[in-house]
Amino acid sequence: MSRKGDCWDNAVAESFFATIKRELLNRSIWMNLNHARAAIHEYIEVFYNRIRRHSANGNISPAAYERLYNNAAKAA
Image 1 (cartoon, rainbow, N blue to C red):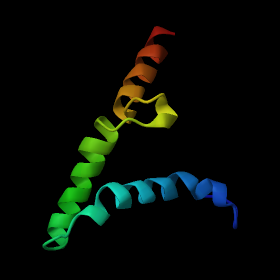
Image 2: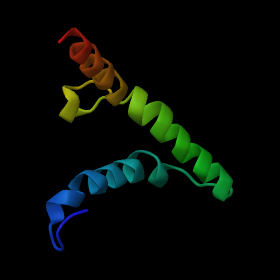
Image 3: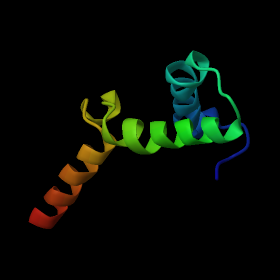
Image 4: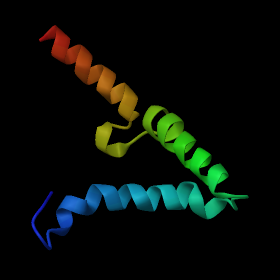
C-alpha cells in the first residue's frame, strides 16, 4: 500500500471512518450485531454513495460523479 509512516495515504479512510462514526454509529444503539451490520451497509451503499454530497466531488454524490465521469469519457 504505502510507505511506513506516510500518514497522507490513510487520510481518506480515516476521514470516512470519522464521518460514519459521527453520522451513524454515535447516534444509535444497536440491538445486535446483525442490526448494526445492516445499518452500516445501508448507510454506505444507499446514503453515502448515492445521496450524500461530497465536497471533494464538487458537492455531488459519488454515484453522480461517476456518471458524469463515464459520460465525459464516452464523449471524448
